[in-house]
Image (cartoon, rainbow over the protein chains, first blue to last red):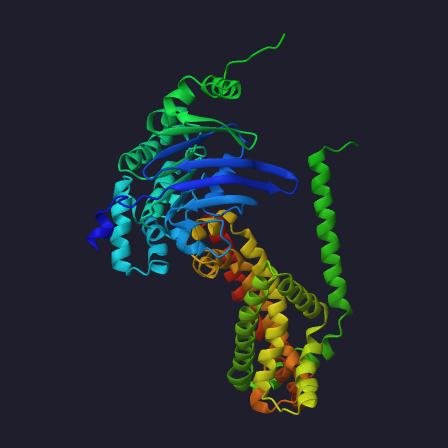
Length: 262
Length: 263
């Protein structure tokens, strides 16, 4: 039991995405994506809204069904029609933009419910793991609060603790700070930073360029359903090679800048 | 003489009140109070209804309603899930069932199960079973629509979060979605119970023995045996209110509670 509590991402899974395509009707949102995340690596997906980065992330744990291509996650081939999707998802933690905490359960139960129902841990063991992870995100003292009694930043940290309580080998973050009040963004980012330091494999869709630059091993810039540019964070954000990347970063880093075309 | 808007509103209010008082007075004057005293408000003669209307009638009404509700809730949940299924055949079956049983009078269902089914299959069912099935079948059609709306009111992210934690679809529904949906539908569900309480009176079309009488049958029986005119029905009606008004208050309480907190 102590193994479960004390292990922090000892097993890390990688992701391998090959020629991934996804359409909604006639609208193709992913136009052949190739992307690799090595075990223990932190990759940030950046790009304008509608570029397909959230869809790509959601394809990795099959919240969206790809039309074509292959995705390998850990030992699973997600795109295999016979894949045990529930078994695969236990290995993959997901953090949503809107938190999606279960409003009828307190923070502790939010973290323990899937442990008892899916991993068949005893309630006592699950509670111990949950409390450990709530402490990890700095919320051990609020374990008995319900989601509507927590701030957005606190809710998102509970959501991270909930995902961690399943001992995932990979964490997916879908714009985890986009719905937060500015003053609570920092707490969530620092939890994610610690997680990265502990060696967790992370795939993060984000608009936080400072975070991407500091924490990501690699940054992938997407636009119009394709990967436009990828590389180490310093290079992609610091000195992008592609004009589209430059344009995007200029808009994001200096939102008040208005260019008047002559 | 010009009036301000406020004065006009006040005059209008006085006129409405006057019309109301005149209408009541006209009703009172037009009523044949002597006949009413012997045929509607003849409470002196209803003594024999007690205590059986309470011990048998009310008890049976509550039992029939409860059984019908249990069947209706289980069937309604099944139908609601079928209606939301990705498998078209389930959706068609559920839609057909709901439209059919919401579209015909409940009385016909009682007759079908009280007389039609025994004829068709040569079986003789106990009255309690017939009421349970008939009420349950009608109730499930209504409850299904209520539950479907409740299930759809739970944000999609809840199911996604549960599935992302490795819960199979059924587990995510049972543990995460359905408990939240039930909280949402508690007020309309309570109203379903009120409708069901009244629909249990339709049992009168079946042949009942005295121990199977519920409130309405008790009232109808009293009309022919007590010589107090319609008074027994008035008493039966009062007993329905004893059940339905608290339920109505309960529904309102659920409503205000869910408005106060999402939990």
